Every structure is written in C-alpha cells, then in structure tokens.
Length: 283
Image (cartoon, rainbow, N blue to C red):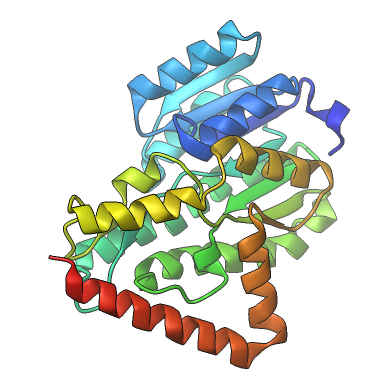
C-alpha cells in the first residue's frame, strides 16, 4: 500500500478514542483515508470524530464497542459493512494493561487482559478479514502487540500471554493472507506516553503512592509520543513491513535476545531483581 493508495481507502481503527489509536486515525485522515473508528468510550470517540472532521478528514463510522465481546464486534462489523462491503485496512490498536506477579494476579485480571488484548483482535479479524478476502481488497492487517510480546519483562506474565498471542496470530496470518494480497504488520511498542500509562493496574500494588509515581515518571521520560508511534506504524504499512518497532531500545533488546541469548538472560535477571527490590518497598 503506497502513500497515494490511502486516499479513499476504508480503514478500521480500534482503540481510536485516545493514545496510539487516535494518533493513527488522525494520520490516516491526513492521508485521505475513509475512517471507521471504534472504542469502548462513546463520548471520547465522538470527540475524536468531530476533531478529525473539523480538520477535513472523513469518518464514515464511529461506533462504540467492547472488542472483548464477539456480539458487539459483529454489530460493529454490520454498521461498517453498511457503509462499504469491506474495509481495505484493519488496525487492531485497542488494549489494556494489567501487570503483576502470578501470586498477586486474580483470575478475573487474567481473563480481562486476555479477553481484550488477544480475543479482541481475534474478534475483529474474524469479523472483518473474510470480507476483505471475498471482495478482493488487497489491503492491510495491522496488529499492535508490545515489547512484552517479544521479551520476558517483569510483572508481565498475563500481559505477555495476550501480546505473545497477538504475535503468534500475526506470524501465521502473515503467510496465510499473502495469497490474497493482504499484508500483515506486527507492531511492538515499548514505552509510549498514552493515557494507558495512567491507567496501568499492578496487582496488589497501590499505584497512587509517590514511589510508584516516580517509577511512572521514569517510564514516561523514556516514552515516545503517540504521534511518533503512529508515524512508525503508518510508515511501516506504506513499506509493507512485517515487524515495526516504535522505539530503538526495544529493537536493541529484541536483537540482544536473538543474537546474544546469554546476555539477554543476564539483562532479564537483573531487571527482575531490580523489580523485586522495588516491590518490597511499595505498599
């Protein structure tokens, strides 16, 4: 998909009310795409739609839905397909962040993370990609995973379960969909300064304490902006790249894992020790 190909093409973006999803929608609007937007938060979604349209962009659909519900995603698909027989691009951006050690994570937290971060994209894929195939839309599927879908970060067992799952789905579809002319891009963001940073849940940890706020501040200082992440994603689509990192540190860590496994294991061991010391200081 070349730059001029975005004009008039239909693109579905999940998680479009804030963060990376909103920034991607705004970038695609500037490229001339016809947007179909969804998010759980209806009021924020309406606000994003209004902002894009005021800037001259085209939003055909803005439909609030919980992507963890297959019924709601099917209703979303019906609304979108009333506007166009099939979309040209699906961008699975929506997600939630719940971290914690296995002894602190509740069963409900595990299910919630997997339900939104893994089953959500699966629901979207099964509701939109078959129509792309049927109508021969030689388009694009973008799945936003995470650095936690590449490497073993501390406190991330549940989150990584969902994000490694997205990576696995993408790896298979990368080849399955090639015969239909549909490119697949897997995005693995590291730190991105989105509202998700403020809403992160850590099981058994009070995230309102000054100690945790200092940790959050350190994370945000290393973070790229949602707009920078969106540019990496859209530029990756234009180049039909499979793997897109949004920051150099994650690209470096992934290279370390692949090419110097003993060094990677040492880095992860040190990271886990540091987090364990931090956990003992947090209430």
